[in-house]
Image 1 (cartoon, rainbow, N blue to C red):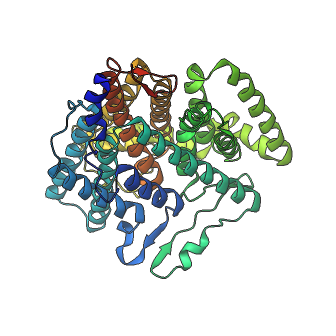
Image 2: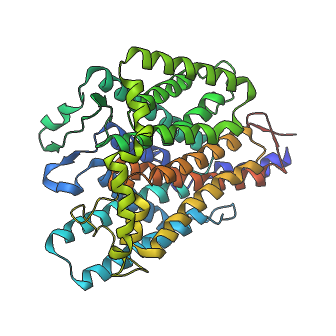
Length: 457
């Protein structure tokens, strides 16, 4: 009991992001998640133009809130944890700021200044999301709550996409009729089939959102929502798995199918054997039902890969690589400037290549370092005695891998949902490192039960 008493002051000390009004990091990030996923990417406050998307505005609020709480932070009883995610992101952000400043000093056409400024503000907004996630979520309980909310949001987004596919309607056009808001359309077709986009501005952004969260959905389903409640069978989470799987199949998108495959394959090592057969069987049956109920969908999907070499989008991507040295010649080390390269010059549909031009070699390396730091931080959970934390860490790492691969198929940082999910998940990877470190300090004094509950002696 003496060990338990010595540990209790640490867990009773409020997080630096908790206030007496109970506004904590989970609450603030949940608001961001709702604004990001529920409000279409094409909706902006008319008076603010490109800077008027609600999630972007709230991200700036998060950055200010993080800065204020850091200034007011009191000394904690626990030792600080080195956060490579924060370190890598600060390095990337510093490079973005330097490239922007150099580009402005160099002089730019008038129509490039505003997009570059918008891109810079968007990056600062994402900084708020990542930093609050890294520093604000410090317990397994809060981390599980945040991930469950992401899972619910992804399931609802997938359901909306399926409804769009079945009805051939956007179903979110009403946002454009709200006074003070303006909206761009988001309905697409390919091979005569409506491509679902949910609340995303483009099907590729939608595909990234649902497939990147699929590992988290699978982890929640396997662990029954990361809760030691044996009566909870996790059926709602398995429903989300089915909705996302079906949405990926009807997306008529190579990226969606590739992302789906990467997410599933990356989760195989941690899926219990008793679930593997059921998942494969259910997935096969669902695929047969979907293709049988939708004439032309199977042939259109097959043509996506069989005719990839002759596809205009594929040819544009491959031929564009030959022009990269030409566009990099201005400044190969730090690039031409973040947000400077407009579609009128060329559309690469590859975020990695676009960063190579805008931020140079250092930019690509720093962006790669952010992914590496997030994956490493999340995988540190494998040393934890909490099985749910190990599963969640692996799922977050798998989500980052999926996003990294999908960013090779489109310029993801140009789209709110894709970029927002990247930095939110990267921030949660950092929080896993903190949770795992705190758990390691507690275990020598207390036992840890099957689902991570504390047991004293």
